[in-house]
Length: 453
Image (cartoon, rainbow, N blue to C red; front, side, top):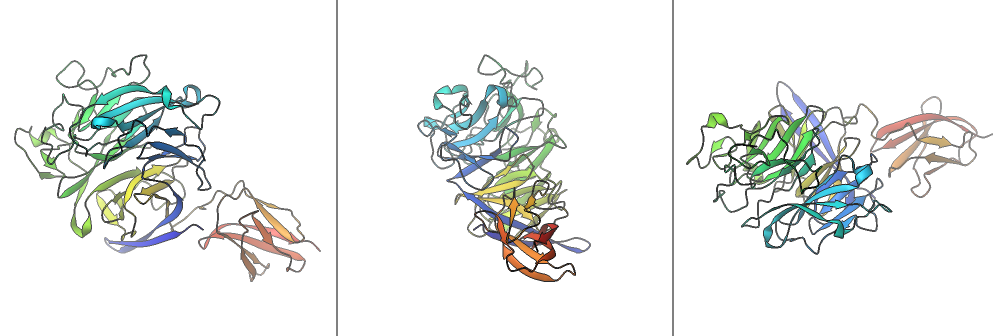
């Protein structure tokens, strides 16, 4: 049975408003660190497990028996290191290419391409690996790890500063180091990769692959496809967590680390003028047990209008979800026992969140103006019915069937059977009724039914 965790969060402006965030337990993985939408426009999810496997999560909350990819033989899974990122090529349907970000032995950051099997694209052979990029690093922490294709078709790669307290090698500000950066490469090449000609440091001082710099440990970044903004959640050193938002088309952004932690000076020795840096749109301190930001997504789905346009993220230590609107953060109370490691977005723009205990939740709000479950394909049959109704194309669990007479009085109420999605109407007297389907006390749909005479 799926579990619901309901949190009431309140904020105060000119008036009190409340917003309910619901986490519906959906699946359990092992060390989930990335959740990526299916490349084939269905609503499956691909779950990256830090130890070195990628699993396919079906819409009913079950995993495929066979891993999509297993590279545990080459992944250095230790502390913050491991298999951390996944991105599907925009032309995956034809070339079956996908890309992963992981640590090899010796801590080396590795970005590689693999190819899904032609006979069964739900699996990939580890022997198809093409190593595209290797970045040595000296410490085990601050690996970054998010990779996403932008609207321009290029692959964006977020790297950490290499680890160690305070960025001792000054990698974040060093434009000749690939650490502490957002990189941008063209994967459509017979070479390991090409560098886009409009990358900002092509032909000048700085590594050609760099798109922006001055990051400590971006965990995670995402694109808002509606506005084409990049959102980067950068984990702080000791005091401050930050959220950055810039247009995806803006090159050479310096986010400020190690000179600044959030909006506060950290170590400005040898740093450029602050006017050359881009500061976060919002930051927060470690009060209330907070310690480490987990970046998420701007909600662009159509089920929860109160969340649309807001950036949803979390803090790992306080076990809270944050909702950012403009420059104001509303925090939920803690979802106890769940230290959130990653967010995901499916092809319907609905959000998911994974925790270090392996649990994966659907992120919901109780403030609905549209149905939580698509109803256009739900069919009630047979009509008229004698003893049993069947609810076809209903994939959700824990749905309640309420039967009303034509005056609106409840005649009976029961759970829709999980095995065959049936509703027993054998005790009804012949006649017309209204069938109402509900989930979590929210109406999904209603339809007139006829009990046979």
